[in-house]
Amino acid sequence: MTVEVVNTRNAATLSDRCKLATSIPARTMGLLNRSSLETGEGLLIRPCSSVHCFFMRFPIDVLFLDKENRVLKVYAPLKQWRASSIVRGAKQTLELPAGTIDRTGTQVGDMLHISA
Image 1 (cartoon, rainbow, N blue to C red):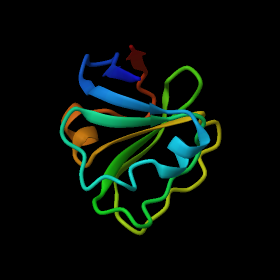
Image 2: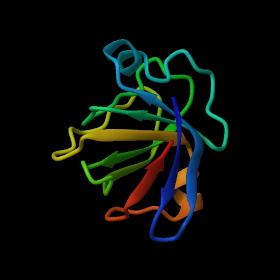
Image 3: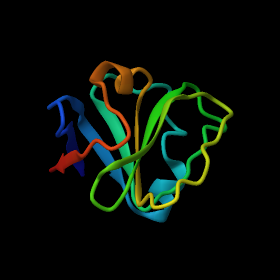
Image 4: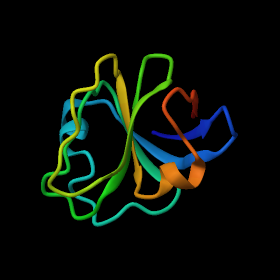
């Protein structure tokens, strides 16, 4: 399934082709089999409160969201061979191409609209 993710504060589209990872195999694999993420692509991982970029080929931007889709923490970017902290209250994680968070002006406290 693919969804669109929009920042409700400034109407910026973070991803118009965001895949959902909700099964254990999909969450475990994440972006490990990818060589890059193109502008507009993303991966929404549910449930998720921390991520790593071990064995990744490229850096990513990461947003940690609560159950209402409010941004709790931002990593812009999270580089290869690095891990995030465990984010208290996070229920899902949005992984995006590096530079997306700066380009869209997304920040902690923003609400995201996720639609199919």
